[in-house]
Amino acid sequence: MISSPFPDIEIPDTALTPYVLRKADELGDAPALVDGPTGRTITYAGLLEATKLTAGGLRARGFEKGDVVGVMSPNIPEYAVAFHGAAWAGGAATTINPTYTAEEVHHQLLDSGATILITVSMFLATAKEAAEGTNVKEIFVFDDAEGATSALELLAGPRLDEQVPVDAAEDLVVLPYSSGTTGRSKGVVLTHRNCVANLIQTAESCIELTGDDSFVAVLPFFHIYGMQVLMNLGLANGATVITMPRFDLAQFLQLNQDHECTWAFVVPPIVLALAQHPIVDDYDLSALRRLFSGAAPLGAEISSQAEKRIGADVVQGYGMTELSPVSHAFPEVLVDKPGSVGLTIASTECRIVDEDTGTDVATGGRGELWVRGPQVMKGYLNNPAATAETIDRDGWLHTGDVAVVDDDGYFWIVDRLKELIKYKGFQVPPAELEALLITHAEIVDCAVIGVPDDEAGELPKAFVVKAPDTELTDDDVKSFVMGHVAHYKQIQLVEFIDEIPKSASGKILRRFLRDR
Image (cartoon, rainbow, N blue to C red; front, side, top):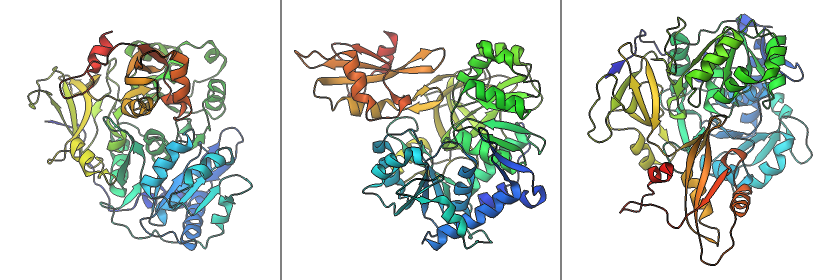
């Protein structure tokens, strides 16, 4: 077993929102959230007030302790108001990718049991279609749209002055969806304690933000990285969070320059752009101290290129939705470990386990990374079988990732046991695409894998067995998938083969497909 080199933390018995906004009165008129494109600002005092009013507005509409609000929006300052308003009212938020199809949103709304959905006018048609046949009673929009209630009406209150009491260790506060190691997306039950613990662990180990720091929040708040590391960790430590609804390199660079941002929280494709795109030289990024990359592996060469060009430290961390999300990251004092994801963060234990023998491997050996700590999820919503496959009886979460640790306690992620494809940091579950493809009348069998790509990380590729005497083409396969899933799940490559390699038990032998 490998313990963290950092001192153990004390986890206060508190709900998430009172912890995140504990400095709001002290910070007062300091900017908490700034809308990058418009400059619209919510101060810390304003955020606390809006949170209390939204909570009261929700309660006035029958929202009760344990209820769930769906939030389906790009990154705007009001996202944090909806998220924490639901939490302050004793409920939870399920964060939904706004680029999902109505089919995908419907699944999440139905599975989560959400009773209220908050979105923006751009996605209102999708929201309405998705909400049919679910528990959603009312749809709100952050902006104005005919046929939906303005979220401003929630601010009419009445104000809910105190956090609704919760059991921090047991009660759900956020329900993001993850595919885990395989299969269709599942609700990840994160408690108040899970989230508070990971904010403290991360702050004490690797991301030391203060009121003097600012950063551009371009990574989506619906994703655990954006939600916890950018939105909640930034607010909990008094930083200024500048929101961007969608990534545009020129705007990202302009906002970093205008706000003299000190940190950049990014994913590998953004690091690649910072390392190689010629437009970067047109902007002053001298205030940046550190680029922190996550959500997918970052190559040592690209990291080094970006570091030299930007003049800031470039590091990466490791985590997953089921870990709230951080388990490994680089400390403030850097050590030259190219490609490493850093050290085990505070109050966290790890093992590297041989897949075949179930025994721990020696330092330098490869094995599956197991993690145990207060940030480990409570489980998958209404799915005890999937929970048992991921968390064992002793509380170890089996990540499905293959790791190596050196004598100094630094970790590298070197492979993946799980089937999940990582496209630009997003999870693409092969099983979901395979289940869709097999419904095509001209497809007899299929398999989907990820193939390496410098920009995206991995591209989803489908191997397809056609029915006899059919004229199915690559474009036919891609078009069929296009109407059912989000943009990042699209099939990018198609190869027609005679037979899908399978084991005696019928399991797809993906390694043979990768070897092709």
